[in-house]
Length: 85
Image 1 (cartoon, rainbow, N blue to C red):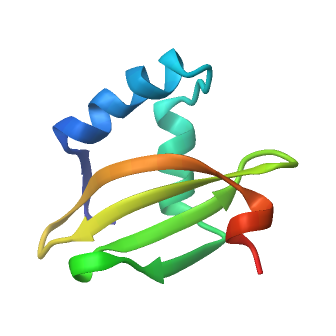
Image 2 (image 1 turned 135 degrees about the vertical axis):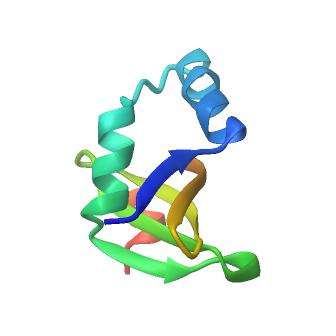
């Protein structure tokens, strides 16, 4: 697999979510990226990997595919009933 890196916003997102009571590990974000339940197209050529993380939530990982690497731009939790169809 190509190299995977987190941009500065994605790195800050761990703290932002923790301040809102949503704690998620780097390993869980990487697992969602590497083993998603689904991947869909996002804006500006970006992709969104999605994985169920508990009974009510998914984690969505927005990333860019480069020639030799992947860059995780951001990630966020979402309600399963909103994102699953």
